[in-house]
Structures are given as structure tokens and as C-alpha cells.
Length: 150
Image: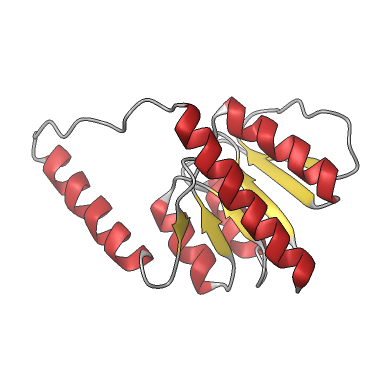
């Protein structure tokens, strides 16, 4: 049971929640990024730097995840790959992607991308806030608890 983190776009407050949770539960957390990361000293935290390039970090995560692992990402195509590999995916706002929801989310993402490429202004996500942090922490705790019971 490993937590993989798509760390380049992961908000700092979420990383901090992950540092504490990994240390507290003795769960390996691997932070994958294109740039060097400073992690608190802990045997449960690992940083993997990958070369810069399109989806290089995503590729490493997608090919490394095993059934039962959790991936923290807002990248819907990566979440789809993770679910196909038997892992679970959680976005930084606390939404768990499932086999039942990922295809619809991927379709909506692709539709919005088409609108943007056609010049339409679609806006962006709402600002990250305390409620998002709390939803994430609660979802992470539920996943960690399930892992302990398994």
C-alpha cells in the first residue's frame, strides 16, 4: 500500500497533510515531480525527480502503481490509467475517482478542452480553500483506515 503523489501541481497544504499522514501511519508516500522537492526527513517520504517533459511524471506513476495503491492527482487521464491498473485516485479537493465516475469525468474534461481550443472562455476551478483541505484529509483518512483493516 503506497501513496503516489503527482507532486508538480499538488497544493502545498495537501503535501503537508500527506507528510503527516504518511509518518503517522507508516505508509510510504512517493512524490514524483519534474523539479527537486524538499521533503521533511522521514523514512516514509520519498522524492522521485523525473526529466522535464510532457507527462513524464504521469508515465512513471502510471507504470509503477500496483493494485491497492493510492495516487493523488488532479490529472483525470492519469487517474483513468491508475484505475485501470487497479489503483485508486484522489484529487487534492477530496474527490475519489472511481470506475463508475472516471469515464464521465474524462469525457467532460475532453469536452471542455475542445471548447477552450475553439476559443471559448470556460473559466477555471474555484480557489483552493479550507473546505477542500478538509474533504481531502477526510478522504485520505478513510483510505488509510481501509488499508489497515484489509
